[in-house]
Image (tube, rainbow, N blue to C red; front, side, top):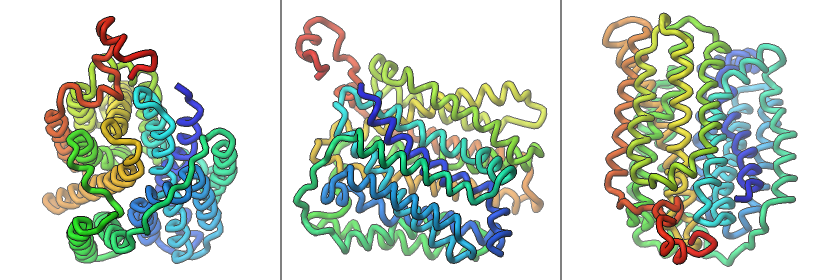
Amino acid sequence: MNRTIPLILAVALFMENMDSTVIATSLPAIAVDIHTSPIALKLALTAYLVSLAIFIPISGWMADRFGAKNIFRAAIAVFIAGSVACAVSDSLPAFVVSRFLQGIGGAMMTPVGRLVLVRATPKNELVAAMSWLTVPALVGPLVGPPVGGFITTYFTWHWIFLINVPIGLIGIWLATRFLPETESAEMPPLDFIGFVLSGLAASGIVFGLSVVSLPALPPIAGFITVAVGLVAAVLYLLHARRAKNPLLALELFRNRVFRSSVLGGGLFRIGIGAVPFLLPLMFQIGFGLTPFQSGMITFVSAVGAIGMKFVTALIFRIVGFRRVLIFGSLVAAATIAVNGLFTPETPYALILAMLLAGGFIRSMFFTGINALAYAEVSAADTSKATPITAVFQQLAIALGVALAGGILEVSTKIHGGPLTLSDFHIAFFIVAAVSAAASLSFMRLAPDAGNAVSGHGRLTTPKTLESVGPQGG
């Protein structure tokens, strides 16, 4: 497999994924400089998520209309511009707008980068390619907190955003130099009504879930926004049935393999979205560690995610998608639940070992569901599948954070006191159960689902070897 393409894309996606979490540990310092409160500043985090939710749906249309390579480079440039704007912001409104601009670039970078990879990679090599592309999504949220704490402590928070400039410029140069040229195509007009409705639906749900437990706004504001998003989603479904070329091609859900990947993967991501929120808080509030100490502990999961990429393709080729995803979702959910057993007396070596194992399993699982989504999607429909998978990922992660925050809030109200270690334990057990439920979706898959991508069962006898041919089918 040519690793150049996935590695170039992974560098850009790592920049985005790390940036989306790195500022969490720097909020107090940023708030002091721009004369606001850390709680109010969390609106900037929400603005980024809302921007992703609005613009991800049009990423596929933009890539087909103007060329995936061109849009990917433009997305990096927009992300750089948003980063510089964040660094020079001196007020809350300016910072919120800058994060929204960053989100526009991020909305195009992730799905279009994945689209470039899918189109440039033969299906029988897609699992191996996805294993490289999956790493930044797992590593970024874990590396972000310690990096953000280190930069803010020993330098200044502005460098959190300014370091994106050289990384982004290198990414644009590498994309120009090495990514394959992609032709623009004659496209039907943009489904503007669909764009408005899908934007309202996704952003309403993401914003509502993100602020429902935010002290800066009353909870009713979050519930009303979610309700608006759900109404818009229903209106979009009605619109998509009548539209000739709807923005999101929901007919892809008729394919069981695609449906299982998106819905099962989304269910599992609810738990994964909660972990980066719960684990650092538990270490700081329940264990009394500093932000930097907790970040260095959670970092070991990233090491596991990187290490797994070397054997992921082999595992799927030997065992097949169905069994790996069923087993992987249950084991990965167990690694989430085990966090609910940690106490300050637990040996740190044991905690690190459990987090390392969790990183291994989650890396394998995400590589699998990301590749499975394209296993039975034609080349002509890849640009339709990409924004759908990306939208569901963002919704699932936002729902995971909202679920975790809601559990903690309800738990504290029940016992009538501040957060305790047992509150975090309860949250971990509940989100682990939600993630484990994803296995039900994969149990419905056929035993040979995705074999064209994994290569499972293709090279078992000389006869099948001849039928596959030198390219592996």
